[in-house]
Image (cartoon, rainbow, N blue to C red; front, side, top):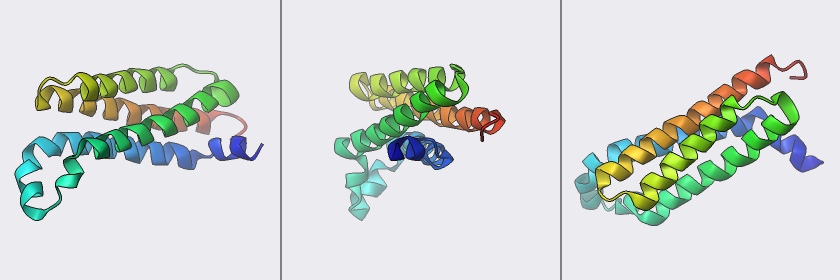
Length: 131
């Protein structure tokens, strides 16, 4: 029961929004900042493990919050559909990006769509009579 209360909190939507937005910004800036990161010793920011971690956190928070909201709160598919489309774009960009620009494009679009899903979910939950 306690996990259901945790999943129902709008804080998860805010966290999911900011992690997804950070993912999109990271992927948008990274191709331009690689040299600076290497010189400053911060090349770990561009490491594949870091990118998979950010993407994984975004997907775990998004799937837990948005599926719960769909099933228990508003029964509307718009936020869940945005999330699934964003997740597909981000995963495809990361897994099948043949060039850094294709990878960044998929990740940027995916991050923006996932952040939009959390924003939409917050709007739906505010309109729900029980919130």
